[in-house]
Length: 232
Ligand code: 0O2
Image 1 (cartoon, rainbow, N blue to C red):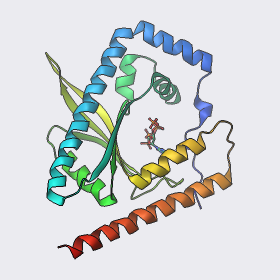
Image 2 (spheres, rainbow, N blue to C red):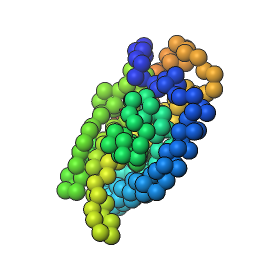
Image 3 (spheres, rainbow, N blue to C red):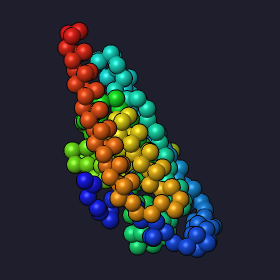
């Protein structure tokens, strides 16, 4: 049975009135147009750095193992609406300074892997790099969320080198298998469908699907080892 938890899926009750939100975005953009754009551009640079690191690891590991551990890498910059919603929800001031100080997931890199063990191997290789500092780690694969969500989340700090100085930026890295990503994408679509009320039936179905997806990951991984052993 899925366990109920408030932290489980984000409540929309925390969202400020839509008009107010639009005004606040306008104010944020007007008052802080340049610093906001500058900050977002630094986050984009940090995402590029992290993405490149994973592309390099993928290239190197594919030579070693004769297959790519990474299926795809997706990057996203948090939208002004989501930034505002999170600042409100966490009671932080709506300023550019506050965004950088209080939010860790403005820059997001999602690494989609073939098998669960690829995730931990990539994590280790990534965190070994001496310009990366681990800020926070949440292993929702070892400890899935009560709704069934699985993924490994890291918050890291990485330097970006600008023309006259170095800046440390925080990036959220989410590692998922294809199956974890498929579940999370569909769960998000289903859960946030307009007008969907709390539904035990939907929660139960999604939870069971998450368990099936975890089982598939484990069977596929075993199969991969079996085939690997055949050719050793
Ligand atoms: P988006 O659009 O991906 O940015 P908080 O965000 O502060 O409430 P925290 O600690 O940042 O909490 O959250 P956590 O647990 O590290 O998870 C943050 C991100 O993980 C979410 O970002 C989602 O991308 C993903 N995630 C976490 N739980 C779930 C879940 O139950 N279902 C799905 N589909 N995704 C989940 P955002 O900001 O919500 O969205």
